[in-house]
Image (cartoon, rainbow, N blue to C red):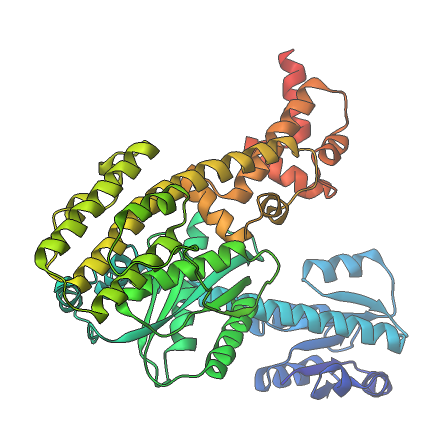
Length: 535
């Protein structure tokens, strides 16, 4: 409830202010009045007054003294002075007291209404800032106390295929993590992509805010509902909600995701997009999460959206699927980078074998060794050492006793070796293109989105990839490159400082100066002067 207090020793002046505008329409629900300072103090002590309109010249006590008292006893109150005199001394004292505005009597009603509108906006912004700071401090304290959770480590290991989802490996991992989860249970993943922060954050603050987002996701998607699950950050830095099977519908998740997007925009100053998966067995979750990441990677148009996973039909070529495992067909798929097609071929082949269960252990051992031979040959062709593949030594030492184990083992092995090769190829190629593009366009007004569009990748995905490979934030690298170019121009040309700012794509001179000083410890003019003195 927004309340205003009008103080003036002239009753007609008070009545005029009360009637000069439709205050309720402006958002002020209650207007109090007083004719002297003592009466005003009583009202200020009894009510939470948001706006104080006060005459300076009053016989018992001037308005300056009243506002000075108000600043100490009601610091949230914004004040506006009215006076018949235009002397600078009054204005100076009003400014020193932190008065919002200073108007001459007789006051024009429209002018006063506009001043009050600006005060209301300032109050709203101040309240939002206080709320944001309180929430920030709350989550900062929680972040300090956070300890690694067994559940999060379990999901990180499962999604990165460090846990083998066959045999008793999965059951033992679930027991070790003390999860209320069965090896045959299903979960539905939701990938939360942090598209863009609307306020500048240093690395520490961003880490705290990401933790805050994680806790907010727990509240929106899991707390107070009949859904169980976990919210985790995987080993590549992606935020995931893993919801356990419990009779949900697409409409439920559209509403939940939309609400979460609104929460992030309002309270955390960031844009997010939610990629919603489908129910999957634990053995399939890793592959499904990779599909969601691929959706994010290729999403260059939709922002702050809810996007549902749609299975893509995978064709394995014109050759019929054999009724046995023909490992000789695998090499071509691997060398062409067609991992999904190869895994689909494996699944289809094994489904046919399961339909006619005549497989002997000797045949299974042959498939096992043939698979290893194809994998070693692939690594040799690609110039990758087996030691560079995560879990390779463990994978190649696991005994395979049945067809189901072989299916999960071969998928894990193929995924691990191809992911190593494909990740190296993408990271190296994309990051080189990004760095080259930034250097070539250093004098253009380019943004992170422009860089992402150049390599046809989602900006959030590109930012994670760039940081993983270089250790630097993409935005920071872009700014650093521009500031280095500005420094060269200051040293080697006679361009004015504002001209240099425009040359490197900054139309806002003060922002350019701030970025330059942050990079080099002095503003551009100081740097140029220092260079002149050295010469």
